[in-house]
Image 1 (cartoon, rainbow, N blue to C red):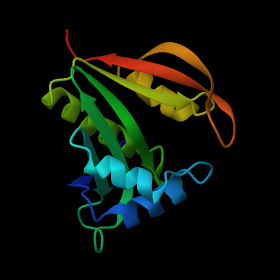
Image 2 (tube, one colour):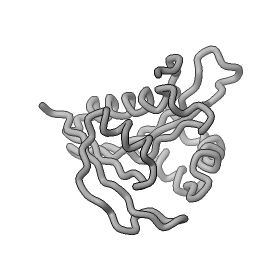
Image 3 (cartoon, rainbow, N blue to C red):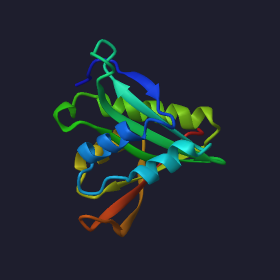
Image 4 (cartoon, rainbow, N blue to C red):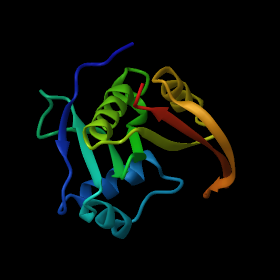
Length: 156
């Protein structure tokens, strides 16, 4: 199932409040802090996007994502969609934008880490061409859980 096309707005310093609210709503078990978000937005290597429906009232944000590109590698730092909107292809649109940004910035590959229990996200990543690299014992906190490291090759 694919949802309506999303409109993307690049997040910038000053958007910390909305990103903190998104983190708390999307990842209540372990949200990023204001300081962590501020550091990411200030980094010349990181790009974050707010995702909204184009005809929604007052930029009704439905999710967001961020990618960091350093040298020939990129890391998907975060990606999330509100729970009631999942399963509609919105996460795929955000993921595609992040991968496109990594490619534009010269990355040859993209890494990400995902909770082992997040089967829906793992399926999305695998369908998008990511392969499993490794199991990361105790990688995630609150609650403690193994992570799965994945990689997408951008050069063929």
